[in-house]
Length: 346
Image (cartoon, rainbow, N blue to C red; front, side, top):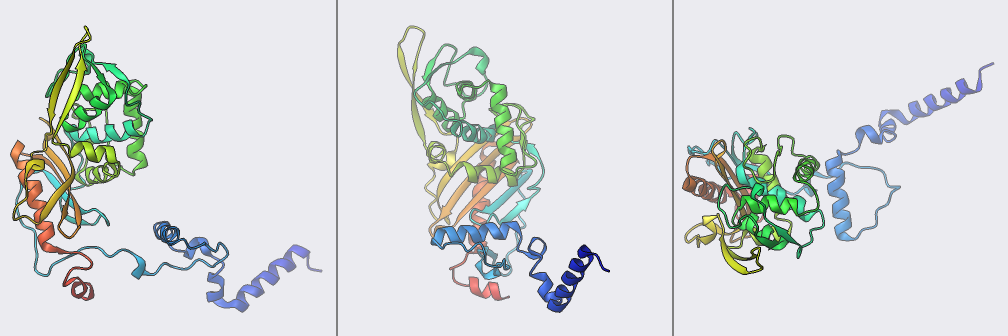
């Protein structure tokens, strides 16, 4: 006599054979279902359209036609320009497609671009905007100084001084005023980098003065994209001038003007495909060279993020970033633009 377990196994095998190989596939969702990225896209589309999900429906591959089409290079366009930047990239903001790049995945020091991550972590840890912080000498004395030992200033003004004027001691005081030690704050910065999937980005302090603060042109672009989703960061980095109020040890108040370090904010982009800047951040230390990242938009609403790391001079970083963004707008077609469908069919 056959045992009961053996008979059960025999019945299952017969059922599988009767269904055939195609029938067997239906019972293998973990192997043959769509990749997790496509599942997430499908779920997002369902949520946006308000469609109630049927959890009992079979898992089917997502149609390629439902994936957002990417910009396409115009026929005959080749980027061959030589720049002083050691690495650079231009990404389409929406799809994160690499439009132009050179050594974009090579880790480099990034200088004060670090302050974008500092601002992100600060905002995501319940800032007390009206809290007053006393600036200390060990907050730093390097870079453009808007603050001095003993100045009493609000957290809000520290935030703007850090991003608008790239003030180093304001940035350290901001981290210190977030109810965590600077060391704990930096741990949160590295944790956030991990959460964002940045594998080559690391921080040792919040200002960018330490050359060991490193990232890549590609990952800097992703940091900027994430940062500009926060309205307060977007507002700060596009503010041309900001007035801070400080009180000395005697309670006397003084107002000081903080100027934005991004000179392209003061450009009208006449005769340029760039319409305006949505946000940007500069960076410099000797080991990093001159660095800059910006997100721009053209008149048709197409947005790109440009990063240059290690340019030769203060002005090179701006002119090279502007040139790269303009080249992308002139030499790529986006969905909906004349000629895009033709390129899609080739």
